[in-house]
Length: 70
Image (cartoon, rainbow, N blue to C red; front, side, top):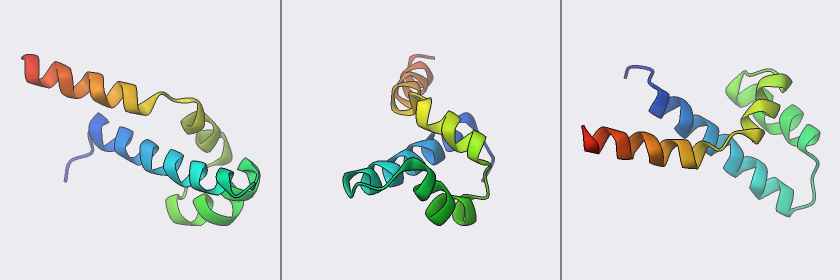
C-alpha cells in the first residue's frame, strides 16, 4: 500500500484515539507516550506531541471531500 496523506491522517487519528482512551483513565500524556506509543509506532516524543495538536479528523474529511469533487 502506498504511503499517502490519507494513511498518515488515519495513523494520527489512531494515535489520538489511544491517547483519549488512556486520558479517560487519568493517565498523563507522557506516560502514554513512553508505555504505549513509543514501542508500537516508533515515533519521537516531539512527533507524538505534534500529532496531539493536529486536527486530523477535519483534515481527513476535507481530503475526502476534495477527492470526490474532482
